[in-house]
Length: 410
Image (cartoon, rainbow, N blue to C red):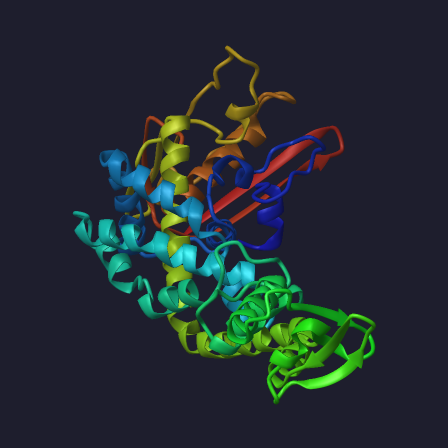
C-alpha cells in the first residue's frame, strides 16, 4: 500500500474531524509494545498463506480457551513497556523504578511462558520456547533493589539492606545515630562504673564524653581530655572521632555507594539485552493477537478463509469503522462482493451522493487488509484470495464523487 491508500482507507487518521480510524477500532492491545507492533503490521500485511493461517489459529485459540485468554490478559497488564526499558538499559539511563518494573515483567512472563508451552497450538508453543524468564536477572534485582524505589537514582534510598556491609554501617550511623550513641554511652558507663556519664556534641571539638568531677578518677587513661567545666570534664575517644568522621559524611558516602552498586547492576544487565528484546517481541505478538480476539468477540467478526487464488468473495460484509459509529439501535446494511479473474474482474458501482459507494470501496479493502494481517473480519463469510497490493483513491471531483479500487493478485 502506498501512502495515498493508507490515507484514503483512514488506517491511522481520518480525513474528517471527529472521525474514527481503523486503528482505533481494532487496537485493544494492553502493552505499548503490542500497540506499536499493530501499527507496523497494519502497514505491512502478510502475503504468505501459511503465516496468515498461523496468526488466525492463535486468534481462534483465544476463543476456544477463555482460561488461557484470561491468564495472558492478566499477566500482560503487569509487563509494561519492555522495549523502552531495555533501550534505556543499553544507554545506562534506566531509573531504579524501571529496573523494578523489569523484574515484575519477568515474573509475569513466567506463567505466560508455561501456558504457551502447554497450549495445543504450534505457534503458541514456539512463542513459549522463545520466552525466557531470565531468573538470574529477576533474582539479582530482587536482592539488590528496593520494591518501591524513588523515580530518580540521585535521590538515593533504592539499594536494599544486606547488599554491602559498608553501606549498612553508614545507614545505621546516618539514620540511627542517636541509638548508636546511646549504645556507646551505656557500654562505657558499665565499663567504667560511671552512672552519670553522658555523650554530647559541640561545634568546637565534635562528639565528647562528659564526666562529673566526682567520677573523674574512674576515667580510663586512653581518653583524651578536651575541656574542663566547673563541675565536669569532657573527653574524646578514638571511637567517637571515627564515628564523627563517618556520620558527618555518611549521607554523601551512602549516595556514592548506592550509585556504584547500581551502576554495576546496570552494566551487568546489558549482557541480557538480547534475551529481553526477544521477550519483548514475543509478548508484543501475543498482545497483538489477543487484541484481535477481543475485537472479533465484541464486534461479531468471523474467521476468513485464506486461499492462494484470485477469488475475493465476501458475504454480508460490513465496514468495520462505520458500523461502530451508527446510532444506537441502527444496524449496518451489509453487502456482498465477488471478484475473480475469469467471470467478474471489474465492478461498477453507481448511485447518488451518500449512497455508500465509498463505504463499499473502503469496506472491501479493509476486510482484505484485516484478513491478511491475521484478524477476523466483519462479514457472514469471507474467502480471501491472497492480494499483493491495494491501491485506492477516494475524493470529490466537481459535483460527483469518484472511487477506484484495485486489488492486485500475484
